[in-house]
Amino acid sequence: MLIKRKEKNTIITDGNEMTMQKNSVAYEKFSSIQTNIQFMERKAGSVQTIAVTSANKGEGKSFFITNYANTSALYKQKTLLIDVDFYNPKISKQYKSKLMPGLSNVLVDMIAFEEAVIPLENKYLSFLPIGTLPPNPLELLRSDEFKTLLTKLKEEFDVILLDCPPINLFTDARVVAAESDGTILLVNSQTTSEEDVRKSKSLLDQVDANILGAVLNNKRYNQKQMASYNYY
Image (cartoon, rainbow, N blue to C red; front, side, top):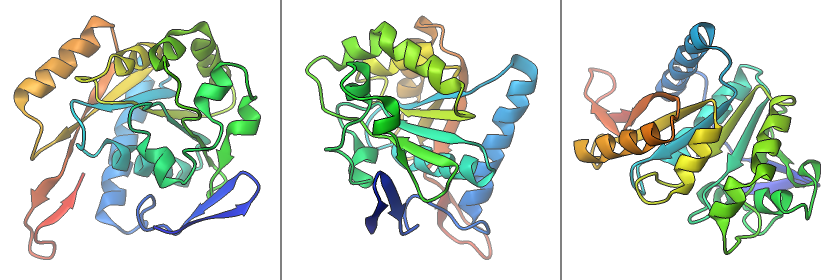
């Protein structure tokens, strides 16, 4: 994936990994998920901040959240993607912004949010990288500054997506989920066990997280014109 800087604090991607063509099957699946959440909003109120987590590593969480962010932006929803995984900031690595100031720097008041946020090619989509890796990420996420930041961002963005670490491995995901309007759990059809899912749900229930649902990833479908095509 080629990533280049267009101008100061602007990143352009080549569209291979983080974006989808409108006629793709994947696009239809992400659109369906977004529509389902919109119906939930009608019944239960606004869902602006969405934490995305998985039971374990390597279950497709980062792929899902980047493409879901792109889908929201394509629908002209002002969308902010935040990397909250201090242990494996994969999205910050993908966007070549791991060494840039980001979330951690904003929370300790080293830099303003407006200076750290990165506009992406789609004018409706922005990204806040992880920032400097701190020795105490959990304390940062438990801080009043984090709660205040999310409240402030709700005034500016329609959708705020938080890429969390695996919930069965790190407490951070529970903390972020508790502060979010809703949580999505990624489930890999090939690697996630039923026990993993039950444990994840139990951990989310312990913090009264609003579980929007689970997304089944890496499910193989065999159809006449689409044999062995993997998609959400």
